[in-house]
Amino acid sequence: MGAIAAGIAAGLAAVGAGVGNGLVIGHTLDGMARQPEMSGQLRGTMFLGVGLIEALPILSIVIAFLVMNK
Image (cartoon, rainbow, N blue to C red; front, top):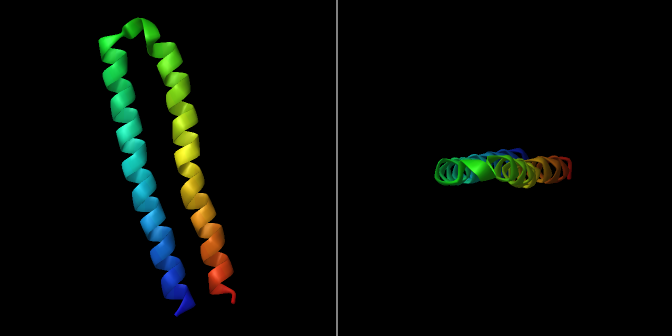
């Protein structure tokens, strides 16, 4: 039962991160299209946001392994 819960948790975290990354990157590209002179600053902010979004699946996998080993 723990393995099923771990798989579901990791899968949902990956889906959420994928959706979040898509939204962040899409809105960043919209901003770059509107204001090309801000593209450098927007790109840096985008990478920071994507890095923070990717922390969720990593933490989810760690928690899933902890639940699975109980």
